[in-house]
Image 1 (cartoon, rainbow, N blue to C red):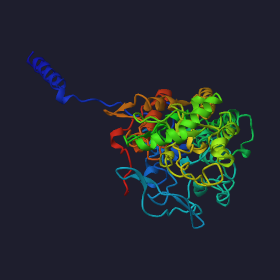
Image 2 (cartoon, rainbow, N blue to C red):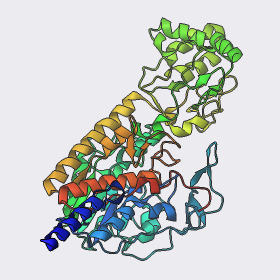
Image 3 (cartoon, rainbow, N blue to C red):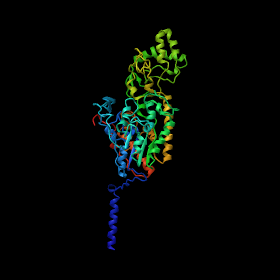
Image 4 (cartoon, one colour):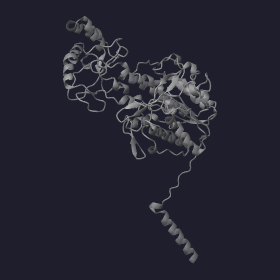
Length: 519
């Protein structure tokens, strides 16, 4: 009886000790691969997979690429070695034949992004020996991953090959897919397709929408890939990667108009004073003069021709929109020339007609590109004016007295073309993922949240706000270190859900927002 009493007392005391809030031991779920096999992991993709950040590829950014983070988490569930074709430094940039063909990375100096000091040391012609698990290639489009010769050093200068892939391709005639399949992967990640519309977007839509053209060999670097071509290539990629029963994870594509590259510069930055947020000071006296000498006459002439909504007088109390060229508008060059000839003379009137025939003020539906911020108010040159010569004063201020050109702004018709293509790509990605039984990451939904409400992780909120949102690097397109960690966690969630694995997610708070000047 006494023995039983002592035993009950011991159990009782133990229970009390374990229920004390300060002494509770939380048993972690053991890490398991589930039905997946991470023994040999390969990652295919573009600059996001490579770890590109701050406008360059460099060692520390590569180490924090989402495939590298995934490989570290896979290691706890039986994952094997994972290697990366590291660059030669933390400066960024590339050399070819003694020439710099890609510049240094950016850092934030407290007021603006600037290039780090030093010269690139990574030579494209200096091969690095693999095999490599991280096969992310900056600049790659979907069809590039199956293009023989894409890693041929001899073709880089002519734009026929990719300088990043040329460093580590197994041969001059190999393909990214072949280099991946040759490693007999047991697990893969594939995130590709962003560049199939991104070049068109970042160039302001100066490329061609190749929908209907089934021959990617005829595409330019700034063109939109035909959705049928994309679907065919994507199916080939997944079929090749799953040929030996490998499992994997794929991700869809966000809309470009959620990236800070397209959302940071306001459409209406012109004001009487610098108010912050990218505003450009014009001055009240200047605005009054502009209304009298330029905007007023333009408004009157355009109104006569039924297009008065293109131009409004500038305000001295609120921010004003920039002046842009919209090539989707009917060209009223001849009409404006005729209207201005009596007052300006035939030669000057013809010049005004050529400059303002498709001009209008920007609206909230226009996307002013990030680099355009430095162009607003600057003088057009013979190269970028669209005229073949530099316009004279006073029509020599981009966005104020001279329309910003196609390269500076994405207009609604161009945004719509990008959206249609992206939607089509995403339909193919999801359908092929489902057909092959792959884990799926809805990257579009994640980006939509970052650009609206933000995402909460580890007790802080991440947004797509340029510089200070925590998600994107200084180039406005590629993630920051913390952004790559966020992507990794999204991939882990998808893998755990699909394959009943119990991979651990990473602590976002342990990843910096921006890289410093010195690494």
